[in-house]
Length: 360
Image (cartoon, rainbow, N blue to C red; front, side, top):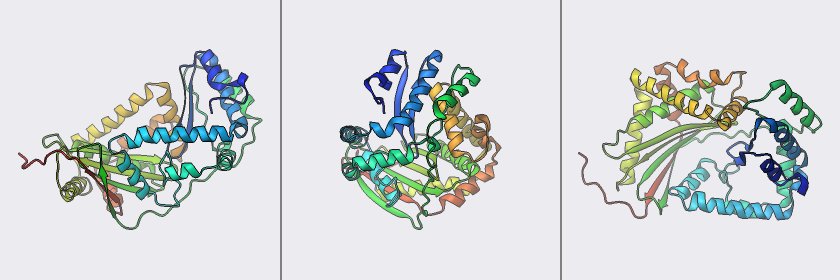
């Protein structure tokens, strides 16, 4: 996606010559993102690249580029999953959380067997159906004249066939809790992960769960070395709530599982103190402000509002919804959603640290 249709229109080379500071492509749960950061006076070139890419993508895909990309993704899987602590555990968790025929069953990078069987025709069909203007969100942030930018966008994109808007697939959520186990060869710390999938989660409910996830991370103070990591991820059509409890020493997985259940009950059965709720709100605000401090973060926030929010909200309104929630709603929302079926993954180290005989 960086080469261009001819040597003279090599996108990366053109942008590099015009002092581009950043040029990259990122794939996530529900989108492909092409990012370019250029000096303000080079906005016309950046918009031309975005439009030309959409108009010429089918012709850029050939057997050589597909084979090269397959090798690159295999290398990425090796560095990001195989050689990372809990990487293969997370891959198995993903496979269990999204059973076939869910399109995310192979994770973001894809299962090795799927990558190997992907053909040139498969990629061309995907490009023709999915990478079309009707599925795109174009975001421009920085120092520019909005009227001039709109004219450039209309000039470059108006002649492109819109294509057909894709609809996110809908799958029934899990109906029963499933416990799986996976050996962890790299990390020496046992971990229990609990994950829930929710279709069509309302934004205020998502914000309540995100506040709850932040509160869960406050519950361990390090006295015993326990660590909780929790969060909510929203994407097109679905959301995932995930909580991880990690111990720095060996314990039976059943004990860690029970500890994780205990922390979860503190969220689903108790109304958190006001000072903790305020701290959680401020934590979400700080995360948002750090994101908005850079151009890429601002573009991400605008895109997220467009793709996730169903109402025409400003970024400030969208990011500030959590302040409108009462403490009781956090508990009630968590109780409603987190009492349902979930996936539990036990990551057992092959070389755990010695067990701690007693806690003091």
